[in-house]
Length: 381
Image (cartoon, rainbow, N blue to C red):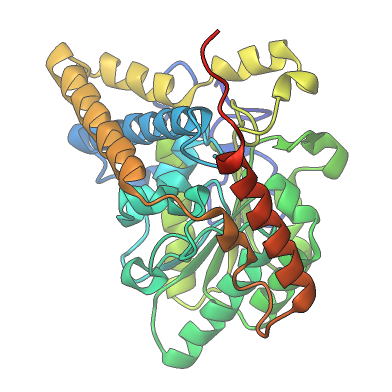
């Protein structure tokens, strides 16, 4: 069976188990659907139309990503963290969640935000310098993006401990990357999650690069092996297989809801774009590696499966493209309609009380900006 890394075909005949290195995969990179003795039952309801909806979701979020990247290049956003290549991991897991589950994400989970119903403009708001940082977390049960690497795992674990106290069966989900697993916050979170059997899912998208640091330098064994050391069951899944990501997330959710505690999911995927629009991955990443992973593109494999099922007709693909284009147009309009933040706003909310040192800096900066308006304008030559 083709896969996103070392695998041995149909694996994990039971629930997620400690030390499992094999990848769970239901759709290979050629779009071939492989039966699985355990996980097929978890996606038995995913028929042709449901597969088409997952494909549409991935096409739309990739289009959102491309449009946001273009907006940043045009000076409308300060920065943008592309998710190119990680659509299946985010859509598959995101569509498994209930509305009362609470998501704690990093800065790259824009597809999960789309699944949660975040307004398109709100997805961009933080990257345009808006002081409110995005959206009201409690209206959609998703925290605003966490830029401090791994800190959201602490929040997710604490929230999950609160779920126990409330007697609810909701689940907290923390999304993070392979680089975050080297942070103390992530490891401390797993200590508490295991000790309290908190209903939390640690969803690690192993995209192979922590900015310019390859995963092989951070982990000499599969990342999923770390969790059993804390007493947390783990599973590795082909992160470019949307159906497999949906299946393993559903299993982890069911475990948490039934009092089985946390689960660690390692979704093995690849960051096909830069870390952010300020990054140049050609300085540290081999082009052959990118080409190899491009052949495992999550959208292409699901399209191949749909085609084999006779579900990729022109009328459908044209409709999906039209939807994606409309969403992109709405995203652009929403971005351009946002007021531009005043440059001096960067000095607000730095200290709770007035600070003469900061006041002097602000005064100097405002005089610097004013000098441009006072400078004589050079006429045509």
